Amino acid sequence: MLLLFLLGSCSHYKDIPYFQNAAEYNGTGKAFLYDMTIKPKDMLTIFVYSSQPEAVVQFNFTEPRTINEEQQLDVTGVRIGRGGGQIHHYLVDNDGEIEFPIVGRIKLGGMTIEQANAAVSNKISPYIKEGADYTVNVKIDNYEVSVLGEVQRPNTFTVTRNKITVLEALALAGDLTIYGKRDNVKVLRERPDGEYEIHELDLRDIHILDSPYYYLQQRDIVYVEPNEVMAQNASIGR
Image (cartoon, rainbow, N blue to C red):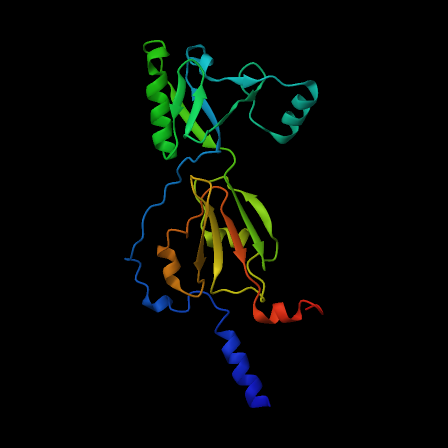
């Protein structure tokens, strides 16, 4: 009985560690520099900076706010626009376009942040006083990923940087529990047509670093499936 227990323990241990074949990886596979791109349903803030604020004020559209909103903004530190309003959010429609003051519609879907900065800058340049310096800053405000299943702290997380990996998202959720299956962590991703695609990642395999799903996109969902032990014991508790 002891021998069978030890053999069973060894078998289960092999399901736990990450990157079991790390010695095979030399870092010269399909590695690439990931750049997040703007997608439909993204909420953008776009602010134009200049040493001559009057030259760009027409592009920094702000929302009016009430006294209560003003108090809340002061406490939370949300950015305030010119004239005391909150910076306006631009919704990217299903065609990848936004409606921007003065210049009208601008197509930003599929662009990186740097490309979007350049696209907006080119559109507004004819309307800015000659000789005035300016810089465009585009930011995605609803870059969120969700992690659920057999993790310590399932939740939806707001990403403040321009990229996040599946490992970083799992770390935000406190990592997998001992009952989470490492060999088929699922990533659900919405396509531009509204359909979802599902991909499985094996955290035990170092080659997930080369996967196109290693970097998470806006509104990706990461699901960790419970293992057989958890499933069998679900009716009586851990």
